[in-house]
Image 1: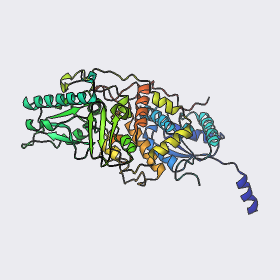
Image 2: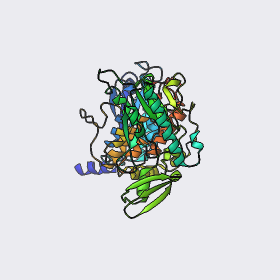
Image 3: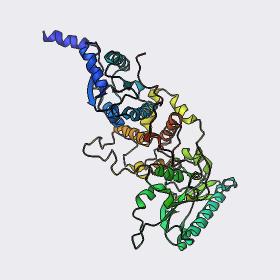
Length: 150
Length: 344
């Protein structure tokens, strides 16, 4: 019995591990809605709830990559809908620069994703996570940093 | 205009004269109490910052192509400590090449300093020599004497004497520099004595950056790895940077300890990545970080990339106008967001 379990585990496809920072007011509720609506999406993400996408220090994202996560997702409210009026607009400028810089350094841009998901968009959340998982699966494990991989 | 003169040596003499004249005038007319400038260092090939307070010391101020550090770095922490016997703040003058002027203006935009309280002595910089490139060429042989004659730099050692054309051995950033003398501040023209230039934006196509970006991401990663692998994490680049004035840097923070202290390559790369991130929209491309690196790492490509990002994305050039808020201090509803993931 144990033998078969082990074998089937071995045969299983590699699944990326993605860390998702979701803002408390929109995206976290969006993910919740995806859950209660029983929408299917791949079990690749681990969610961290943050007060606002403006809370995300670019260093969180880079730190996640060093710590071996295969990709990072940051999701907040749509521009104009921020609970704190402008947190996501501040964040958007940071993310723009971060994404250009990591690409410049030779880290694949698909390792870091930014998205806007509102509390009513459970379906959109599921679709986007499906899309991210597919993209990261294509990239393979993140092996560029010390703590990455096995 | 000084720069049209024939040789670099002549330009240097002329600039030095300009510095001394203006410094003497400012001190004599009691417009400033102290002047920060460059003086000749104790080792060849290097200069040392100096603060002079009296007219007799004016001749200690020099200019040559080794004046690499950005004096704005000394100004911000120094201003509160520069006091006379009665505890009154001293009025400070500062010798400002283009990038020092830019740094001062950007610091004023970040409300770190009041331009009304300082005097810039603007000079038309004629480029700084890339020290590590020359040392590499000499294969680490000791230099006992360095001098500039005409358009050449002459290096003397124990049993050699070599000449190098200065134009080929300038910093990469100096070769592309468009702000040779400090930018004129529209509302505060009197802050700058000496030579200043009117400039509202730099006009460049950033060919070097796009050339690097045309490589594949693996090639870029390999290049960055090779570039940064000698780094010993001494943070000299941070210490020399006029924009690094945080009282606690993220690498020194202990609670929580964000970040390892080792020179393991991925940590080194992340240090430089985050450092670059913190300088976005603030870096004034003075090249001080590369000049002070004991391992001779040339960070100019990262600097150029930062300039390109803020130029193309936010149409901003750092250090030209103290009235314009830097891009990371503001936001717009209509900022570009092509990088945001969409369903299709």
